[in-house]
Image (cartoon, rainbow, N blue to C red):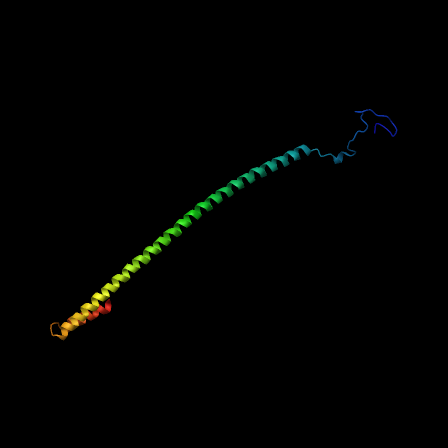
Length: 132
């Protein structure tokens, strides 16, 4: 203390000098440690920047994947619709073949009953009808 109780002071007068009492309280490496902390925080900022970039790339990749999956699903739907159409055509062809085989069998049977066709011809048409 530079002044005591009751002393008059002017603006700007030094009234007290603060200092450490023990040298053990001083940190001789304070500046170095503070620099290390600043560097560590700077590295953390860089690291988070890299993480943000990686997450943005991941979001973009997921968006692209979603578009591709949607396109794949559309293709599968088109394939299924075309398969249904193809199966419908096959079914109609099978019905037509059955109708033809039935008519041929009945004609051959009638001709055999009239004596114009042999029994092996009737058996051949019956077999073809069963295969159809």
